[in-house]
Every structure is written in structure tokens, then in C-alpha cells.
Image 1 (cartoon, helix red, strand yellow):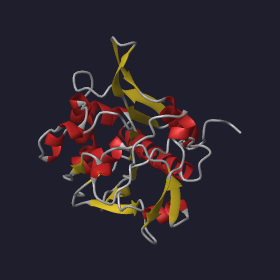
Image 2 (cartoon, helix red, strand yellow; image 1 turned 45 degrees about the vertical axis):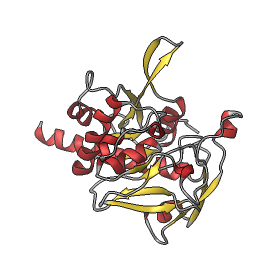
Image 3 (cartoon, helix red, strand yellow; image 1 turned 120 degrees about the vertical axis):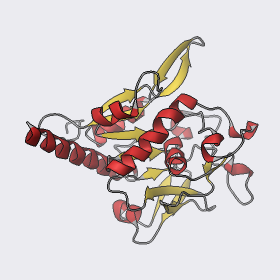
Image 4 (cartoon, one colour; image 1 turned 135 degrees about the horizontal axis):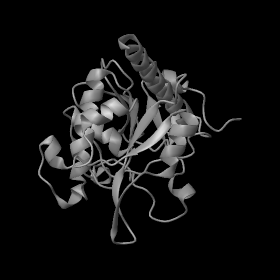
Length: 268
């Protein structure tokens, strides 16, 4: 089987902008990076061309990204959304931040929702979608009464850290139920923060057993806005939960690209 999926336009694969994260390589060299598993999921399952975005307003603008890309993968990342973005004071519990990423992703999400341009939110990206539309976050889920520890295990191999750890139950007959073909699925969990107050337009369509929101979409949005708190990019081609999510996202990006090509052709 060809290891690049066939969901593409006649001219080229749809371009998916993968939101990069700032990292320090070898303790001194600043880089904008994206996990290889993100690129694999976008290329091999979504059938799109992965393009890592330097998420810093000094180098790119939201308008340029909207024009360049057909969809966006809002990746996970160790830094958290700054609490000032949802009206709260910074505390040690909020962890580390990436204000440059905040400055790109939050307006980008709002623009995509308005335009109908597709995005898939993962972990931090899931939280960004809620904040971008007016919601709030808990700084540390495991400190809440009755909640489990959703953080990544500190030890073990990558396979052990990304192993399936808890079920997520979807709304009966809802978007995720229909997409997955099942009312409940098993997922990994590698996050510290989570949704506190959902934004008005956010529909929580799936929960962990402790009540933590795990699957959302934007109500009445004209495009693909599915976002999940877990990490479906791990083993995306082989996991029965990850594969339909990335396949549907890739189709949405292909539809956007095809529609845009049609507009360009008409203008020409």
C-alpha cells in the first residue's frame, strides 16, 4: 500500500500547517520544532503535505498562514496558554508559557472558525480552541477533587508513555460517536491542564470517566473544528480511534483546497 493517503486535489496534496513549538537544542540553539509523529499522521493518514509553522508573529502573520495552508494541526506542547488570555493571574501552577505561540494560534483559530477553514486541535491545541473562543482552563487537573492524574508517566519508553490509559465516552449520536462508530473509545492521556469553563460555542462531546472534557467541536462552525485532549498522532495509522479522526480532517482540508482552487480558476 502506498504510504501516502490518496485524499488530495488533482494539482497537489492539501497543505496542513503544523503549529511548531519553540525548543532549545543542545542547551543553546533555539528551534521551532514539530514531532515527527505529527508529520507522519498528516502525510500518511490525512493525505496532506505537512508544513511546520514557526509560531512567532515576528516571522509569520495569521493572514499569510490562512492564504498558504488548507488546514491546521494545533499540536500539543509543554508550555501552556498564558492565563491572561482568559482573564486570570499567572501562578506557579500554570507552568511555562509560549506567548509567541499564543499570539499566532488564538487569532488563527478565530479566523478559521469564521472562514470555515479546517483545523484539528490536539492537547494544548484543544485548550487553545476553548480559550480562543472565550473559555477558561484549570491549571492542574490532578489537583481537583475526584479527578485522576492525566499527566504523562514520568518514566518508561515512548510506547509506555503514549499507551492507552482511560476510556472516553461520547455523546450518544453525537459528532464523535458517528465518526468513531462507537460510543466509547480508549485513549492515551498526557496533559496537566484542562477545560474549566467551556466557551459559549464549544460543545463538549466526550468525557473521561472523571468528568474531564476530552472531545469538543465549535457549535455552528462552517468547517471542521474537532479537537481532542489526548494525542491521536501516536500510531495514527494503526489506531482505530486516531485513523478516522485524521482521515476526516484530511478530507476537510482537501475539500477546502478544492473549493479554493475552483475560486482561483473562476477568477483566472
